[in-house]
Length: 162
Ligand SMILES: CC(C)(COP(=O)(O)OP(=O)(O)OC[C@H]1O[C@@H](n2cnc3c(N)ncnc32)[C@H](O)[C@@H]1OP(=O)(O)O)[C@@H](O)C(=O)NCCC(=O)NCCS
Image 1 (cartoon, rainbow, N blue to C red):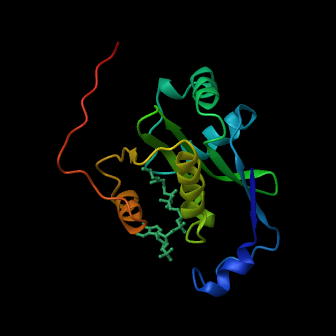
Image 2 (tube, rainbow, N blue to C red):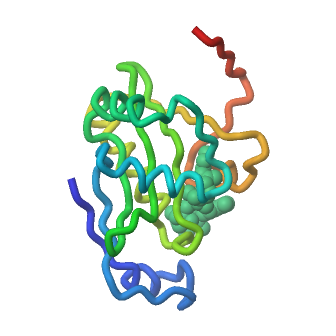
């Protein structure tokens, strides 16, 4: 699935003035395992995204297979400038590792990537979506709040190595 839009068409809507004037269009498309190296490069380059052994190529390939067509990237001139992982367990949806390259922020890309995932979850009949934010990532929390997610104060996350 492809979404095409042009940054210049978005700029007059008042998102970023003329700080960036981008002639070429940006494509939003499904993330596939062939994108792995470039996506890891993006994730490593942004603040607020924490990678672990769970993000090995093998694990991401398994994740993408189990959640076919649910994760997305933003691509411009062959470079990956935005990415997000999305999956569901049949009950709830989960978003991971949303990132937009620092040079392309405030153009609506983050929101579009999230919306693409939520649309996919709706197709699967999923009614609610969760995500995890590092406690020091206040910008990330502000973003999620701004686009309609609310912080859960009624529960904590527990984990165990298996
Ligand atoms: C968070 C992030 C993905 C946002 O991407 P982006 O492309 O700049 O966001 P958008 O342009 O789509 O913003 C959508 C809306 O959120 C607002 N917004 C963006 N960043 C925001 C922030 N840090 N705080 C509050 N609002 C924010 C925008 O103003 C816009 O508002 P509008 O639609 O009402 O005009 C990006 O800043 C990023 O990659 N951060 C580092 C990685 C990270 O923290 N990811 C989250 C991990 S949990």
